[in-house]
Length: 326
Image 1 (cartoon, rainbow, N blue to C red):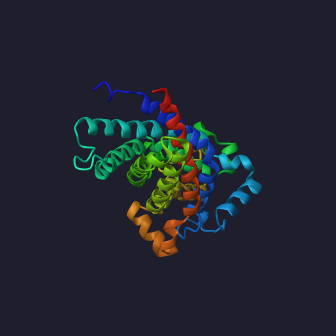
Image 2 (cartoon, rainbow, N blue to C red):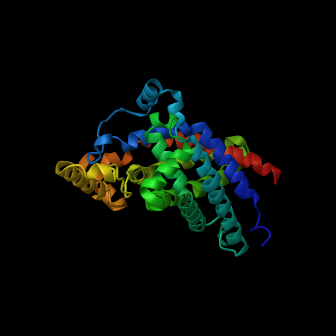
Image 3 (cartoon, rainbow, N blue to C red):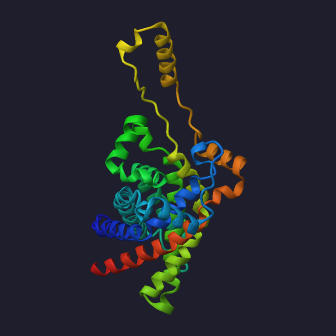
């Protein structure tokens, strides 16, 4: 059990995730902006403002400043400090447990079982992403509303979501978030380990091996996860205000009959529930395809892949170097 309680995979996974996040975050911002635009149901995001990743990058920089590309970086770092730490630490811990029980390696070939590897990765991804979901919601909100990030920081954004949407608002989109993380982990981690093992004879346990293995792993995870990521981003960005705000004082309501009628109408409008654009993952997927076509599920694919490549490269190289301290 000493190996199972080893804290180093958790710490190194978190540190490597934070390093990778800092290096690739502007690409993630362009991906988020591309994913929310063109929604027929949400008028605030119905316009197609960006033609692609580079166009979004240039326009955000020119119109909102370069700092806007890093809107939401602190909740992203906080997310990686929790999600990255738990995900990679849990994955390698589960692999150690599977190895001790003889489940991981195929007895006939001696190679690692793909199914066991994928199961460990899926569990690690789903659990860690569900725990870290509030930081993901904060990141998406700050990325979408980049200009406001100068006035509304991490704490203020958190307070706004909590006050107007409650605790449930912080876990908006947790279903597709867990699904996306499970898919990415199930594809990315086993593919990386598989490639690294088979490239060992050619490159050895060196940076070149880590580079190629992580690049190959990123393509598969981008293809598998982008539709879920689009749904997740849209669910996280929609708001449902449940708190009633009474802006008319008691003294003002008693002045005239007209004022009373106006107050009643205002109160009724304030107390009427606000309907969500999407009721869940399936509804979001159906509405997106129906209104924008199937290709809309792959909005932001290029920045997703472009980001995943460098992200994985930075992460795995950092992680492998940290492992030298074992």
